[in-house]
Length: 147
Image (cartoon, rainbow, N blue to C red; front, top):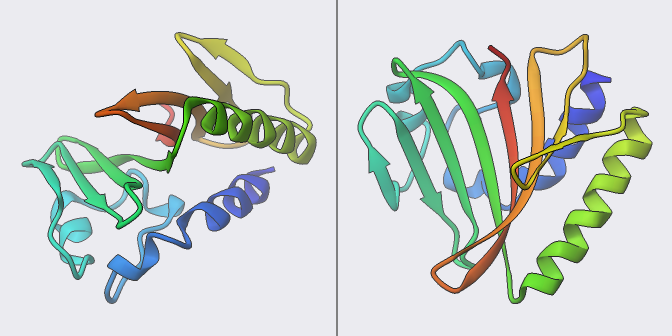
């Protein structure tokens, strides 16, 4: 089951890996590497930064990747893929949810606009959400370390 989450992640990170030099950040790094490790792995400067708490890297099409930290340790990776309309983002969200359910056999739970997939054999929670920021609609894919 954890492999299915990794396959989903692989498809999503293809457009973001060009910004990385040297070491690529992976799901297995959650809870193991630190703020400076992530920052030093990138060949570009973050477009947004909150020292020790978050790093955001922007892609030319408006998409973003966020790295979130607790006590400087990496705890979440969030891929925000930009869409031209809310309709397009929500249509992709439905496809992603159906595919994830089919691949994992897990029915998601829903909370505060998030669609959440949890697996008992994994310490990573996967969630999806559509949101708007600055007139751009995003499909967010959250990979978060369970508490």
